[in-house]
Structures are given as C-alpha cells and as structure tokens.
Amino acid sequence: MGGPNLEVFKFGLYLFVPVMALLHFGDPQWYHSHVLPYKEQLFPRGDKTHMQLPTDQAAVKAELARIKAAKLVKKQERDQAAQEHGTSQPDVSSGTSRGWFRSWW
Image (cartoon, rainbow, N blue to C red; front, side):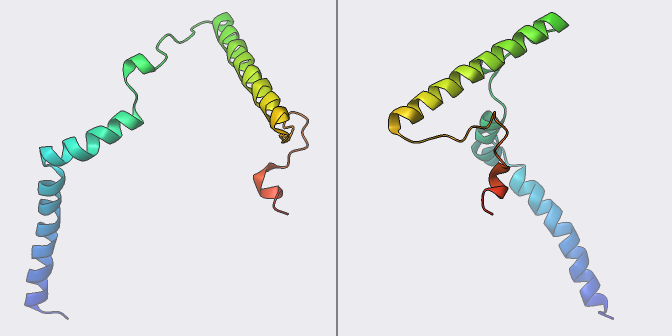
C-alpha cells in the first residue's frame, strides 16, 4: 500500500481542492465579472420578455394564429428575397425535405 505519507497527501488534497474552489469562485469580484454578464445573456430582463400569457383556450388559439401568420409573412419575405437574388429556397411545406442529415447522402 501507499503508507502514511500517501494518506496525509490525499487528506490534504481532499481539503485543499474544495477550500480553494470556494475561495476562487466565491469571490465577489469573480462573480461580478463572470456570472452576471452571462446571466444577462441567459435570462433576459423583464421588459424584454412576454409577460401576458393567454389563459383561456380562445386566447391561446388567437396567439397561435398570430404566431403562424407572422411566420408565414417572414417566409414569404424570405422567398421573395430569394427570388430577387436568383437563389431558390427548398420548399419545406411540401414534405420533400428529408432533413439536413439525409441531404448529405
């Protein structure tokens, strides 16, 4: 076996790693410079989120219809821009698309 010196080393390592992690990651300067900027990217502020969620079935259907209409408008604009540039977009609605992986075969 390793002997008492190995056990003392392992014990010291087992104490040293968590204590140093707490000292490093618990530092307020590190928190403000690394965590808070990422938190702003991950969780948007309240004024940037949609806070009024529909609660009844009619409101949900109306919101879904609005989202679908907005997507359709964006798709038509994208298709129109592609026709002006002379490139063709694959028609996803016809069901001919086989996905990104199948397009390699």
